[in-house]
Image 1 (cartoon, rainbow, N blue to C red):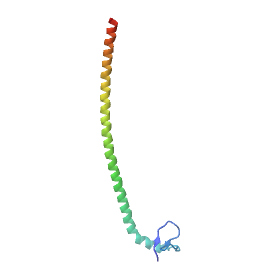
Image 2: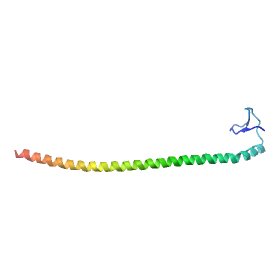
Image 3: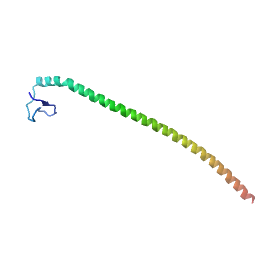
Image 4: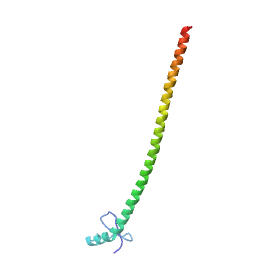
Length: 107
């Protein structure tokens, strides 16, 4: 028996590109039993590699989130400082304006 392509087509292919008739149920079961352990190992390797890639992406996303969180905290502090300075400048401007108005009215 030649190698069978596990193509989802209803007919099985044999090595060399020719078509073979449908495999019997027993032949198919034997083939599945022979290929199953290697396929399971390969699937396990793929899942493990996929999990590793996802863990790396998650770790990278967590690091990026921490950096963005620190940046947000820094920007929040800058905003608070600017608001405080704006309040102080507004108060100073009001005092200066009141002083000038009182000086002008005295003239």
